[in-house]
Every structure is written in structure tokens, then in C-alpha cells.
Image 1 (cartoon, rainbow, N blue to C red):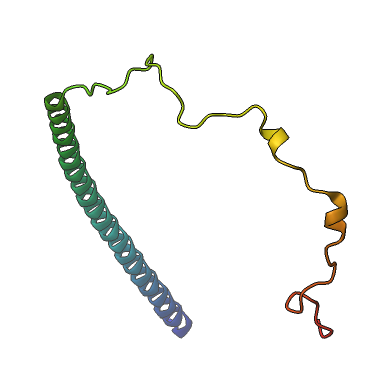
Image 2 (cartoon, rainbow, N blue to C red):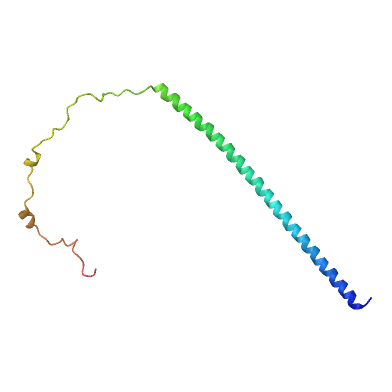
Length: 128
């Protein structure tokens, strides 16, 4: 057999070997992805089951709370108002129709006599 044929055969065997290693690597990655997916499905199922159990527990708790509230309401009876809506009553403070006549309005001249300067605390500072 000529030497170039041997070299070519060796080269082809090397390529086949590399392709087989790549195939094994791809297979390992696919298996790893499937394993991760299975774990995620298991965890999701556990979370869903836990949520179902808690929702059921809270539903029972709320039902029992409503029942106990209804029982306590029925034991109390309906409250009776001490005063009816139609009762007559006299207001405690009398209104005066002449209230405006009694109060004097401010005199504008008196207001204009007020000092217009600001107090020292409110005056603007020269730095501001």
C-alpha cells in the first residue's frame, strides 16, 4: 500500500474518532438537559401541591371563621336604636337670623393704619 494511502486512512480514522467524541458530548448535554427538566418538573409539582394544600387549609379556616361570625351575630340579635328617626328634638344651640347685624365688619381705614414693615425675623437678609 502506498504511504499516502496510509496517511489518508489515518486522517479519516482521526476524523471519525473526533466525530464520535462530539456525538458522545452532544448526547451527554442532551441527557443533562433532560435531567434538569425532570428536576424542574418535580419541583414545580411540589410547589403546586403545597399551594393546593395551603389554599385548602385557608379555605377551611375562612369557612370556619364565617360560621363563627354568623353564630356570634345571631346570638347578639339585631340592635335596636335608642332613638327613632322620627323623634322630635330641640337643637341645643339656637340660630340667630340677626347674627350679621350684631357682628361689625372691619373698617378699611383701621386696616390701612397697620404698619407695613416686616418684623426683623421675617425681613429678607441681604445675603439671600
